[in-house]
Length: 189
Image 1 (cartoon, rainbow, N blue to C red):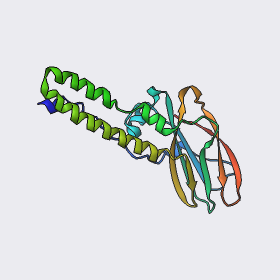
Image 2: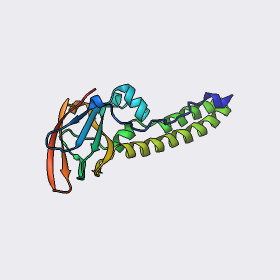
Image 3: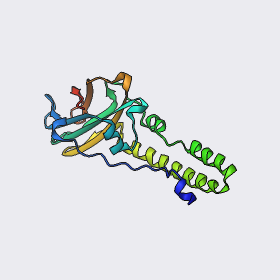
Image 4: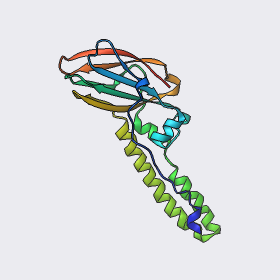
């Protein structure tokens, strides 16, 4: 019966999916390279990050690059005109409160000894959920990526809500020509 009282902290998120065509555009100057840009809703946050990131002060934006050309491009979040938060800082803001969960059950355990069991179980599960969350945020928000010829790449950037703008610039570097191309993208919600 005691096990039923635990909150069972967990982290269950889905992989990033390709953006629907309505979010993807071709840009002048980028031959055969399409860019998709979507600002996540709260529902999207729960689907892909199992947390409400927006309520914690950040707007996740998925960028998708489909390179149908024979050239290689480089993307860096440092070349985005909006300030991008460190994904690990965002992850820490949405961590499950392991200490709070353990302390809560432990205080109850002072009055009802069996509550010490869920304190340990939930503490371990909460820690594991945070480790999985950190790994997932790191894998989905690649700050620097090479967009190889005939490839498809996805990443998520986190913009502080106060700095969010519906139109912003990203710069891509063509590795073959060593030329930079600045593109003005529109966020679709």
